[in-house]
Each structure stands twice: as C-alpha cells, then as structure tokens.
Image (tube, rainbow, N blue to C red; front, side, top):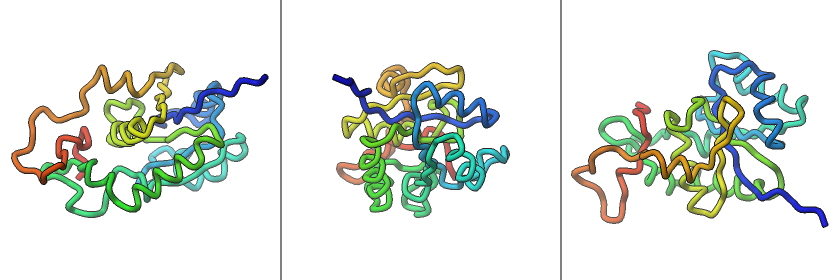
Length: 188
C-alpha cells in the first residue's frame, strides 16, 4: 500500500535569491505549483517578475498560478486600511475576491503540492504570511514556511512563538470586528 504525503500548503519568500537557488529550495518539498500572491508581481530581480516566472517555472516542471488579485496584501478599498496604513485583515477576509482566491487554493491543494510565494524572506516581516496562514489554519490546512536556509517551520509554531497583533487595541471597532488583526507593517 502506497502512503501519500500529508497535504500541506507551503509558503516562501523569494527575497534576493538567484533563480536556480530558489528552485533548489522548492525541490525537496515536491513543489508542483507556485502560487504568486503578490498584488503587484514585479521585482527588482528580473527572475521574480511575473512574465519570467510564467515562462521559466514550467521548464522546471512547476506550474505558475497568479492569485495576487484575490489574495494580495494591498487591497484597493480605503475602508480596508486603518488610519495608520495597516491592512485590516478581518475586512479583507470577508471580500468576495478573497473568498474566491481561498476557494481556488483549497480546490487545488489536494491535487498538487503547492507553495504560496511572497516577496519577504521572513514570514515575520511579511504582511501576507500572517494573514493567509491564519485563514488557512482556521480551515484545518497545515501551512509550512520554507526558510532561505532550506529548513521549514509550521506556521502554527510561528504564531505560537511570535505575536502578529499590534501592541494596543483600537479605540473604536464595529461589534464583532477584530481590528487588531492587521498587517504587521504599514502598507500605505
């Protein structure tokens, strides 16, 4: 009887890696699909621009899927930011676009080993990782971050060891709304 690997959604920050070094980080995890969740899939590193990845990844037997419009961390609506410029995850998670993106992830993650690609190498400085990981963990999906040194770490461990919440509670929020769940850094 063949045992299948437990399904997991991996995350990785492309940082300043050379393309082949980046691919080498994905290989041990059997990554078959890279999901680009950057709102603007551009980079000062040409090999992390959307057009390059769309062409290069299939040559390395990795599919490319862009979901930055649905899952990106730079919402367009002003009411999805607080007065300090942090994205408000509670509000963003309730948009139709976001739900559509999460549904796409959940539909494909049982069929392919996928990785969500961010820009920042550390999940602690990334504004997307704590947002997407929390939503996936709440839906009983195991999330593992792939570090630049080749190691990996469960997102649940990251949350247990690090606080992504701001140090103080907001003065006003709608009943049932959690305005402390926001991006760790200012987006705007």
